[in-house]
Image (cartoon, rainbow, N blue to C red; front, side):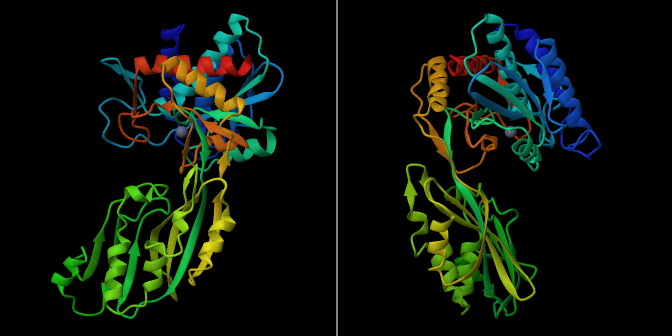
Amino acid sequence: MQHFLSFINDLNSLIKVPSVKGEKTESAPFGENIERAFSVYKSIAERLGFTVINHNGYALEVAIGDGEEIGIIGHLDVVPSGTGWETDPFTLTEKDGIYYGRGLCDDKAPMLICLYALKQLKDSGIPFNRKIRLIVGGDEESSWQDAKYLKENANLPVYGFSPDGNFPVSYAEKGMAVIKIKIPKLKNFTDIKGGTVVNAVCGYASAKPNFVVNEKELKEFGLTFNNGIIESVGKSAHGSQPQLGKNALLPLFKYFLSKGEKVEKVLDYLFYDKVGLCKLNSEEGFITLSPDIIYESENEIELLCDCRFPHPFTLDTVKEKLNQFGLDYEISLKHDTLFVEKDSPLVRALLSAYNSVLGTNGKPISQGGSTFARVFEKGVAFGPEFVGKSNFIHEPNERISKEDLIKLYDIYYTAILNLIK
Ligand SMILES: [Zn+2]
């Protein structure tokens, strides 16, 4: 990598801005700190000889070349630092060959690396046979208003990649729907609640019985009794991978059933998958269904489920199965499947860059989560997290080694070179 020291200096200027979303101002839809991060990035890009387009405070763009357009999208906003840091989260700090800082990998270094790679390609005189549009958003961690603005106003390229996910290259992302199941209130229990967010497996649930409980019996169900409340403790996991968690609602519903409540259907369909919804699968994975939140409304009990479906399944596939449950439900689509052909020029160019730099034989992957690649109609996520390695993204002590930073540079440089050839 050329100009490593100047790269590290620029990276530090970006890390120094605590670019967490804040109060909207006239010129800054995501607050002053995002505006500051944009202005630092803009001055770096201008110093490197690029013209920068400002998409009304929602995103910045650097474009180079002619011909078919390929987009690259990432972001400069970060999640709050939180606690547990061993270094100052907003100072790029190096210890024993490892760099630390909030937003380092998610997504400031990848965004700066792509800019430096474009600069080196520009200087080398290699002709750009495609137009590369490097777009830097400011609202990925919150509500994707930058994506919405760009889709409506920036005439985005169809194909593109986002260095805001995992390697080798993720060519498919599942669609997601939230299913609300409504069941009648129970006879013997009130105050039923559980779960925190719909995209995390329910790790804790509780209910209040209106009878004297037998604690020994409760224990057999894996439940405990505290201050008049029955508690169920499971293990949370990302809603797209319910198999990695332990849903706290299951033992609770088994207990409800044993006390004569009519919850057979909830158990049969939401937990035991009687209609085989979660047996449906394609090369891109299985359909998943995870009941993650429960609460009582005025007249009924509501259960919110995270449902993911891989290409080529659709919301209709899910509805068809749901109709067989015989349960009252509402369904809302959060996002559709994202799918790019594995043998498309985009996926091949990226994968070959990755494999040639690392000397590996990595294959395209599909995933249940969703990334910023969705900004493009045909978008793929491409790094920066290496297989089997964690950069502590969204956690304290977010980090990357100097060695991996250089690898990232080589991979993104080679990928863009493959795309413009
Ligand atoms: Zn990110």
